[in-house]
Image 1 (cartoon, rainbow, N blue to C red):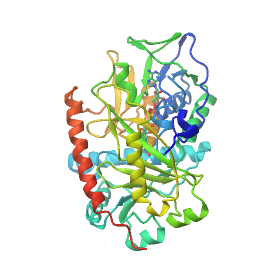
Image 2: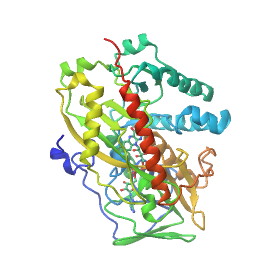
Image 3: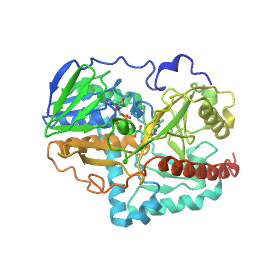
Image 4: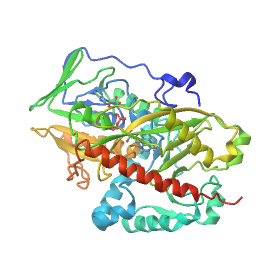
Length: 443
Ligand SMILES: Cc1cc2nc3c(=O)[nH]c(=O)nc-3n(C[C@H](O)[C@H](O)[C@H](O)COP(=O)(O)OP(=O)(O)OC[C@H]3O[C@@H](n4cnc5c(N)ncnc54)[C@H](O)[C@@H]3O)c2cc1C
């Protein structure tokens, strides 16, 4: 697989990479300072402006540089490790509230796309959670049952419906999560940037925040200036611990994706998949597969990389990319003549309980944060951005099941890495076993 011309772009979606806007020079003041211009930060800025607050956004690179411009674009109400675990841990009431939070997040994005006319190639076809062998059907039934108990909109697909939908043949069984679909995350994050600017947010790009001084008025230092405000909003997701904050709240995990060349009409026909549903597999460390507007397949997740402490891992890692290509070839043997054109990576922020960390920090309670979406932030981060804006202006954001909830701290290093590596090794062994049993649907 060659990185080719795209080698310097962060992903398929942002190629060529956007030119950053102006950097911060001098000292500025606002009602709120937002650090990070991904989904969380841009939505926080937009929602603050719509409430009349003056807002400054500081972004180290350019809007979408982080996970928001690199993800696979599945818009899903996925929350927690899985729904049976959510039900067991939290019961019907709180588990149901968590499911409603995740569904509200999807609805929030869908409403924004429709009402604001965000151009992001959204296909509202839902997402299928697929077993790769028929023996997985019973476990998938359990998930669909837990979903029903928690009020979620998931249902098992019968064999007839799998065939009718013409899903790729590696989908041996599966359920459909009817909410959501797939979008182009690069277009979505850039459209949000435009919306925030149009609403009057002051965005400074190429502006890393180096230091934060707390107080009733928070002041952040950047290389050539500073910004202060009564509220600081941290929208730095997996990068947050590197700021020296919330170190025990999240840990970064690096996720990679590959994109094929655009499929020709005949190649497209070979795989079917006319509805363009997003597909996740029911592996312990799931795989994701989707079609793009220009007829590529974007596949990945699965082969993740763990980082020790706050260490940043390289974006490009040939061994991981080779493993992804092998995974893609195993799922789509009928596309042996399609090139895997490029691959890229980005960090997601994991929490110990797989729920986002949203709340207030700091001695004065005026450092607000929304991080830790565990790889499901297209919907959640967008929604949490608006909740943070509400918190900052003194509105009730609702969702007490998420906002200000009691969090489970990560163990300190080196224990954290030892435990994480042991868990990942076990899960990967289980997934290899699942793969050995993989059996595509008959034609
Ligand atoms: C490969 C991959 C695939 C994924 N697939 C999906 C998917 O299909 N569906 C889904 O729901 N989720 C997916 N995710 C997760 C989703 O992308 C994230 O949850 C979401 O984008 C988080 O948004 P955010 O704004 O909180 O963080 P980010 O988008 O990471 O934004 C944080 C921003 O903060 C900036 N920043 C960091 N430090 C500083 C600093 N010191 N000063 C100034 N700025 C700073 C960064 O440059 C960055 O732009 C995926 C993630 C990855 C990496």
